[in-house]
Amino acid sequence: MLPAWQNEPVGSIEEYAGTFDLEPGYLDWAAFGPLSPTVRQENIADLELLATGRRSSIDNVVSHADAARSLVAELIGGAQENVVLQPSTTHGLMQAIFGVTGGLLLSRAEFPSLTVSATRAAEALHVVEPQWIDPPAGYVTPEVVRDSITASTQAVAVSLVDFRTGYRADLAGIRDVIGDRLLIVDAIQGFGMVRADYQAADVVCGNGYKWLRAGRGTGFAWFSDRALDELTPVFSGLTGTDVVLPLDGVPPVSAGANAFTVSVPDHIAAARLSAALRDVIDTGVDHIEEALATRTREVLFLAERYDIPSLTPREAVHRAGIVALAPPAQDVAALAASLINHGVICTTRSGTVRIAPHVGTAADSLVMLGDALAEFAHARSW
Image 1: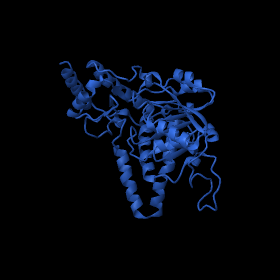
Image 2: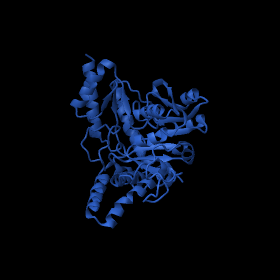
Image 3: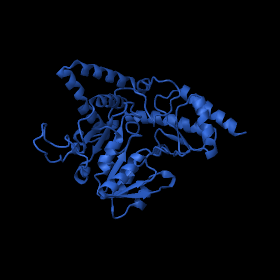
Image 4: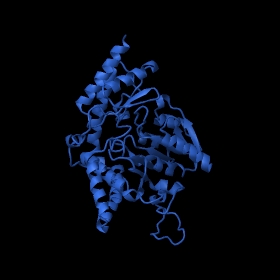
C-alpha cells in the first residue's frame, strides 16, 4: 500500500492554508494546535448525534474509530488492522516500550514520553534495559546509532522530529544500521506535515493535538507485523482479545494490534482525528511539507538577520516546522519578553526559544516576529 503522500491530492494548499482562522502571532504549533474549522464542525455535529439517543446516530459516531484508523494507515502506508487508537502519544509509546525485552537504545535528550517510559519499564519489569546515548547537538543520526548499538540492543527509540532542536531523523538511514532490531518512532512533531519512511519503523506513535489541529485525546499507534511478533502486550485490556463481549472467563490476548489496547476509544476524539487527517490527505503531505518548509526558512532568515543563533539544522532535509533559537543565556529572558510584548506566542524552555510556524502562518505573524527580534537586537546592541 502506498502512503497517502504519494497519491494525487484533491484539494489545494491555498485552501488548506485558508482554514487557519486564528489571530496573528501564534507560532507555537509544536506545543498545541488550535482546532481547525473542520474539526470544530465535526465535533459539534457528533455531539448533537450523541444527544439524540438514536441507535443509528450513535453507530454513526462510533464508526469514526475505523475511519480514523484507516486514515492513519493510509498516511503510514500500512494496514488498518495494524493501527490502534490511543488517548495520547505517550500511551502508545508505553505500550511499545513496556513490551520490549532487552536493550533499548535512545537519547537522554528525547522528549520525556520516551525517556520516562523507558525508565519506568526498566524499574517495573526488569526486562527492558535503557541504553542511553548523548549525541552531539542532540541529533540522533544513523552514524550515532551505528556507533552506539551493542549485541544486547533489541530496539531503538527516536523522535521523527526532535522537540528541542527541530532535527528530523533519517528513519531509513537508522533502519539500515540497526538491521532487524525494532525501531520505535515518536512521530507527533511531524506526522502529516513531512514525508517520512514509516515503513522503516516498527512502531509509529502520534497524536492529533499539535500540527493536525484535532485536539487532545487523538492519539494513535501503528505496529508492524514484526513488532506484533516480538513485543509483549503488557497493558492489554478487555479490547485486547479476539472474543466479542460479553467475555466468558478471560480469553487469551490477541495476536493483532488490538492487543495493545486497554478499552474502547473515545469516539468523539476519533471523529476529530479523522476530520483532521482527511484535510491533510486531501491537500497532500508533499504540498504541506513544501509550504511548511517555506515558513521555516522565513523564521530562520529572520533569526540570522538579527544574529540570533539557532539549534535547528540548516539542511532542509533535516528539519520540519520547529526553529529553536538559542541566544546567550543572559539574553534569553530579554528575547522572550520582546516576543511577548509584540504578541508572539511561542515556547521558552531550557535556555531556548522555540518558534513553530504552520502552513497557515501569514505575513502579519512573521512581521510581528521580525519586529520582536529587531527590538531585541537593538536593545542588545547597547
